[in-house]
Image 1: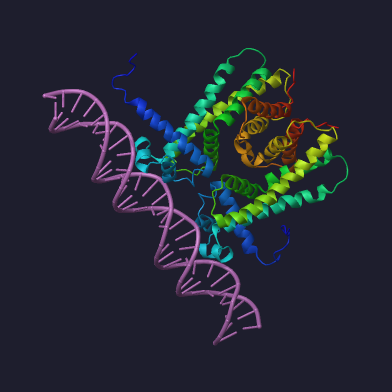
Image 2: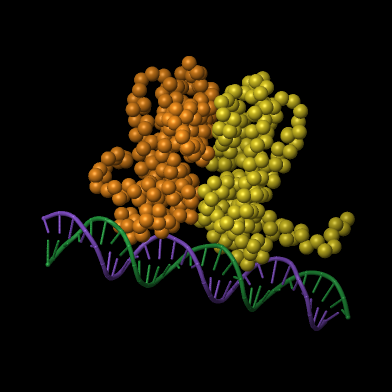
Length: 214
Length: 214
DNA sequence: GATGAACATACTACCCGGTATGTTGTCAAC
DNA sequence: GTTGACAACATACCGGGTAGTATGTTCATC
């Protein structure tokens, strides 16, 4: 079972690659995958297609790389929390905070992740690209399971109450993801303001799960 | 017994129109607006483009009509509840139930509504189609305000607690909408099962809003 | 000064929205 | 019962946009 290796690619190798990824993520967020042309991405970089196709074999692959990068960021944000001892509900709350903050901080990448999941659910991809995508989907599914396991444990601890585990997790994650749709940074917004928004979101989800606020 | 109206070329045309709308909604749900071609819709109808363009002037207009139909259904579902007397929190709960049920029952249309809102937020439409769409967006915004007003009132009544009204409404509606993404009807699912799902969703949102369960 | 990476330029093949035109059935009037 | 008119499509075609490719160009490194 070979999973994604975090630092697999050479670090200092390509600023150019990262620039392309970031610009493409912005485009995909603003117009969606289908409506974004490679020329659009190139234009944003003040470059041409040649540059992009020099680094990425296809549009679908570019999309997939953004997807992977976004998920890498998410795993990275959760990493220090996952191993924390203590009650599951407390761990879930911290995980939720980190996740939600990630939705805000890396919004373009997270929108790509979202669209990637949607694309997979719709099954509208070429059969061969689908393998690349479905590997990423599994990556993302396991990510969701991190939260799923915690709320399952929290329920067993008597710290949460809900009927169906899958549904509860779906709704909770949807809540935590929601900022990618309605959040946009306001001029002069401080870190404290952002954290406040995160707290409102996480609080909503926690209450939704009947979490015992200690 | 004879109900044929003179000069009414409507009935057969309306059936055909509805068939097209429904087939197109299915396609848009499965592949998204951009990835769906008019030929795709025609193929699903076992017909050709001619039929579609005979009834709808453009792809964007077809999309808009589905959007409008979906919203019409939503308003219709809320109509009898809106005028009910009693506490706001109670009214909100009933509205939420009706809305969520609608998400499940008319899922293809609701997905189109969702994508329409996304398209508008992204601003990726031709300037002239944008007028048609933004009118629908306003239609949809007023719909959201129905819920917004109720939770504002409920908070004033002391029956709900949350910090930011806009954020709370956004999250709550997102929760109620979420079935359009993860729900799919299971074989042998009864109405009672569906209602149970609705209850889980609405319950989650209600607790998220700190609703006083009476 | 040869080589290859990192692009830009030029071009092609294809798909898709839209249109223009052809075909069929119906129905009304003569 | 023939004809004309029109609705409801089907067929054929066109033009624009786009993913992908093939080829040129620059520049650094050795």
